[in-house]
Every structure is written in structure tokens, then in C-alpha cells.
Image 1 (spheres, one colour):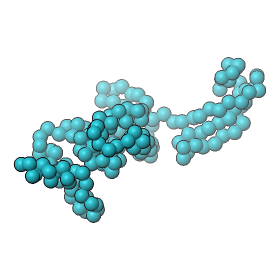
Image 2: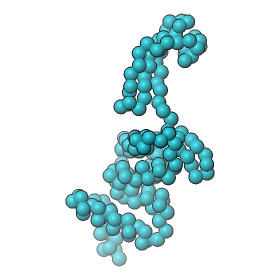
Image 3: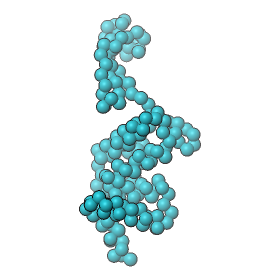
Image 4: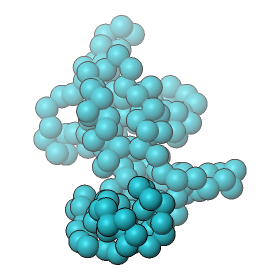
Length: 169
């Protein structure tokens, strides 16, 4: 590893520790030439294969940007979005593959987004799953209600919106 101070390629590892629950390794190094110490971090690269064939590194920022559009006007904070992106990355890494298809990234977003905000989930799912008709939305809302009833959850924003839509009709 090249020393950031004197630019010599000769350094030795003084200490190694795992960080981020084993997702990375932090190493303290000492330069053989100048004797100064510096820290490096090693992480595995998670790659995303797009439909076009392009392969690029996974980006939490891209996840946040995509989900932020679905959360517009909803009570979702930047911290919530950052946590969601972390959960998505953790889920993808847990799969044990160095390269995942972009479709898998979208699927990994759906579950934590649904837990965060059902309206944002429905917005994201409508684009991701290419809803074409009102029936597509109604089917997804019915599924959300059925799963909510099965878990005994309180009525959510989604239920309130659907009830309001029925009163308007």
C-alpha cells in the first residue's frame, strides 16, 4: 500500500479490525520509509448489472434518490431514507453474490419501503412494477389490506386513502 505522506509503496500492517459488523476491515499501517502511520479500510464491492449490460458499483445514494421521489410529500426523513438504503444494501450483501441484477435491487427496496410508508411503497411499486390500470392499484391496495389484517396491524395511511377514495366515488 502506498504511503499517503511520502508515496513509497512499502508499508506494513500494524493492526487489523473488522468494522460495520464485519462488512469492512480497518487496518493501521506503518510506512517503512518515513515511519508515519495511516489507516486504510477494505470493503468488498457490490456490483449492479443493469438491463443494458452495464455493470456499476452499488450506490446507496441512487437508492435514496429513487425512493425520495416516491416519498415526496410524505412524513419520511432523510435519516429514514439513509436507513432504508442501508437495509437494502445489507439484504443484497446477505445474498452472497458480488454482482446482482438491477431488478433484485428494486425488489430489495420494496419490503423496507412498505414498512416505512405504505403510500410511498405504492408509488414506488406502481413505477417499478409498471402498473397500467386502476385495477393494478386496487389489487395492490387489496393485498396491502389483506396482509395488514392478517398481521393485526392498525389501519394505515393506505387504508385511510382508500376509504376516502370510496367516499368520493
